[in-house]
Image (cartoon, rainbow, N blue to C red):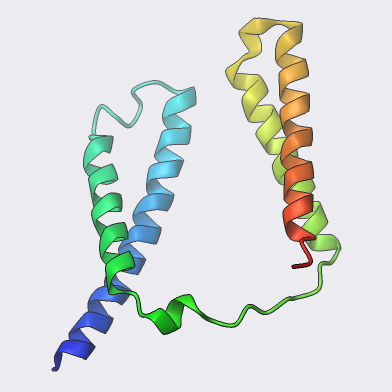
Length: 130
């Protein structure tokens, strides 16, 4: 095997490790926010964060210029995209409400406004015509 092949395999491996560990970390972090010490008693999240950082650095340094300059395909926006934005904004608002429900009526205002902001920003990003 030559150096280019090894570099390609290391890039692919670091990409997969980065994506998988980031997803696991975010899920564990979300669970830990609502149920204290359910996972952190068994796993040190700092080690997982270190794996994410190292694999992300490897992924960035081993990427080719051609990979970064791929042609962007503009798929038409359909009703599924809008419904996904709406559902995720509602889920975000509910999570925020669950986290700050001790504030009383202000928690409702903050969660509704944050859901609307998430929905509007996502709408603006998806409809960007540049």
